[in-house]
Image 1 (spheres, helix red, strand yellow):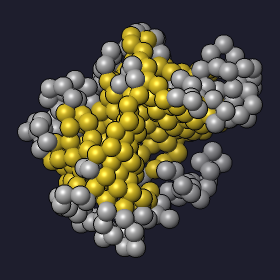
Image 2 (cartoon, chains in turn green, red; image 1 turned 30 degrees about the vertical axis):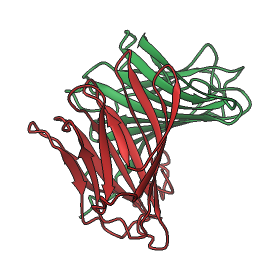
Image 3 (spheres, chains in turn purple, cyan; image 1 turned 45 degrees about the vertical axis):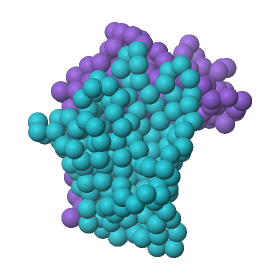
Image 4 (spheres, chains in turn yellow, brown; image 1 turned 60 degrees about the vertical axis):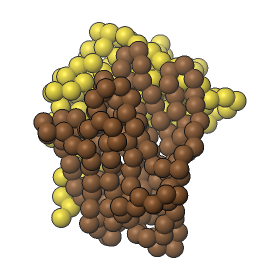
Length: 166
Length: 177
């Protein structure tokens, strides 16, 4: 028998226009996976969006990237980073919303490193699929989403969902 | 695949009613490893299915296969892949449903099986999965075709050359619509 309702909104934020950081704190450890969705625009120009987990800014992050630019498909990699970016070509900009979905699988597991997968979409710039690694066995209890150098515009929204497996 | 999952907004004091995305079954691999993960007797009460999971295998890159309804007949499946290896994007086509795992780090996977019970058409699935190992890794976008009009009642993930390791976990969800 199915366990019932399983896809639960944990929190949502609408940007004020005065900050480039959105924080989900005290994330409940009662779910199996987390899903972060963002629909963001910047206050100025094209900017990349990144996350820090558990306020950890040490070099524990890495990622493998697949991108479509509109003229070619490319792949790239970042290693030993202080944060992990949610986009590569599908960056946040001031005119068209950038839509990102990131899946945090087994985020509360304290035995394994954390592998996450992202889809980032911006029709005017590109489309990205990214797999991230956070080399920590700590459960994820905090996610900070940040925009490089500028604020999020006030039309930007961010929602964190929890998914509970049977 | 969020869909219309709330009858009330959680930040307005109205409790959300999340009734359209349901957990059907979960398989977690213990210390004994497993050569296959199978979901059987899948209810026909949903519109779509989603499999979410993490998995790890021994050794380097390992290929795995996926079967629907136990169908192992040659020519039943097609797969198209677009994947990134960190230095180049690669396209590939195959006549099986496959999925790549790794022994170094856990891969994450989301597989959508849309309209799984429709008996008037073949079944198309899509997958997003990959692993990163801080200097290596791969990210896959895949579409799969099962050339059979039967309703999907079982899904089996086979570890071909290396078992699924402890802490690997796959969960099956049903989505109503």
